[in-house]
Amino acid sequence: MTGTLAIIQARMASSRLPGKVLLDICGKPMLERVLDRVNLARRIDNVLVATTTEPSDDVLAEWCREHQVDCFRGSMQDVLDRFYQAGVTYSPRYVVRVTADCPVIDPGLIDETVLACQENGVDFAATRLPPPFHRTYPIGLDVEVTTFSALERAWREAKLPAEREHVFPYLYDQPGRFNLKILNHEPDHGSLRWTVDTAYDLELIRRIYKHFLPRVDFRWQAVLELMESKPELVLINAGTPHKSYLDVDERGGKS
Image (cartoon, rainbow, N blue to C red; front, side):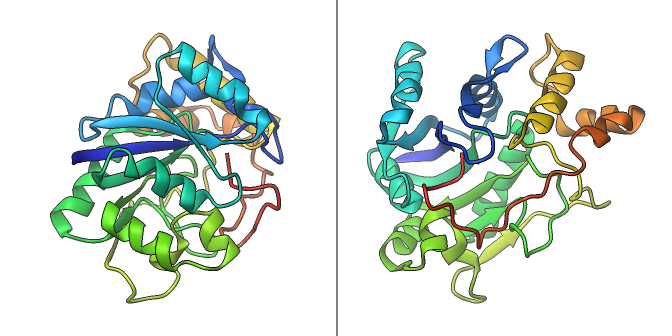
């Protein structure tokens, strides 16, 4: 049994920006930027990319092979099954979920969330719950950590399409079913958007990377300082709506 497995959820058939996970961000595809950030986390023992068996994701699996990145291919629509089956091969104690459209994911915040799950002895810890729940960290710093035993129970029991597609709603959509720990930040920065679903989002992320490179270990607080010093950056993607976890993409899971 390994300690902590980070699973990066990725697919090419994004509904709003097809192929986004391999689009360029200052010389590297977005997926590689996410991998670079996740690999900086100190409480992660193994990292893999979980994509689908659809032909459209052949290019993604090939990219992983060329870059010696572990890759698991599973169901497009039942992403909960994809995560569980990917985890079975590692038998981890904890599973961390990150999506491949969050290229400024913060390694320190990943570590804080893993630690919160471990030290509080909970089944699930996260930096946010998706809409309609409230969040205090910027969209794009989304980290979810669960025990593998809780993931296995969700895999066995979850029945609703949204519970299967969005992986973890079964853990938090009914109070008292599992023990939870949600990390919150004061002041509230939950209205900021640092994820990539549209061309506007991608432009903002490219501007952020252009500012910090060659550094790739910049913390999320440094991104916040940049946004506050250049408020015009916030306007680039200010009109982009964020999906609810209750939305179901008929073609399958996010990113």
